[in-house]
Length: 82
Length: 82
DNA sequence: TTGATCTACCGACTATAGTCGGAGACCATA
DNA sequence: TATGGTCTCCGACTATAGTCGGTAGATCAA
Image 1 (cartoon, chains in turn purple, red, green, cyan):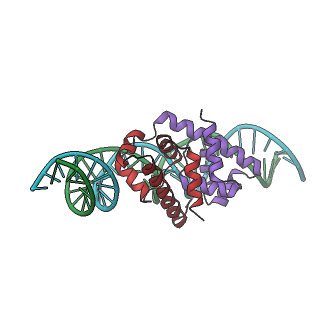
Image 2 (image 1 turned 60 degrees about the vertical axis):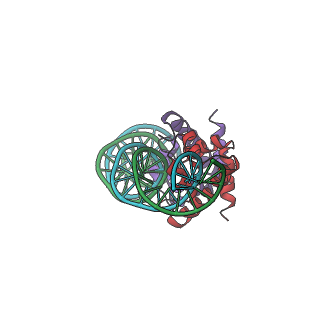
Image 3 (image 1 turned 30 degrees about the vertical axis):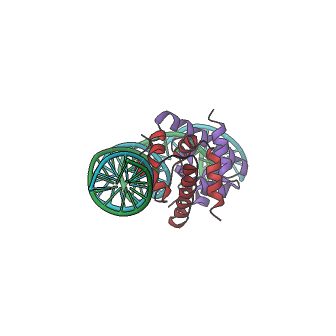
């Protein structure tokens, strides 16, 4: 297995928290963000609850609509890890 | 569809170039990097050729073995985009 | 109450990330 | 000639990202 189970969940939940913070900060609902990113509303919910791990393209798409850079989302996620 | 085809390929090929540069800079073969990251050798090849898009966990795993931060890989990828 | 908004959760999907074994090409050094 | 190292490409898989339609709980306001 590539990214082993445990660490993977850590990353997913860390990113979920970062995403939720960034989204609420900019005042978008999950559904509004999903619409803006051309994603499904349930998927945003899954991401924020750490049940899915985004691909790189998803991170870029989200960051664009949230008015932040992709690397800032990743940096915040990385900080939350250790 | 979430990340639509065209932009997706751009991101994948941009990341591939960044990955290859970072890997050769640190003097690892694709196979050695794959082994260190617990991934498949063919998958590293696919990533570098832009045929696959990594998940966030994969970016973190790769960056760790390459001795760089995940956000630096993402930042370089983002720069190569526009 | 009723209605609107937001979110969590649910199957059951479809698309793609990621694995695995092998084949072939190129380039060194011997 | 080879033998080793590196990489590309190939099916054919398995695991998971991401979609879709619906239900339900909570909150707030009319």
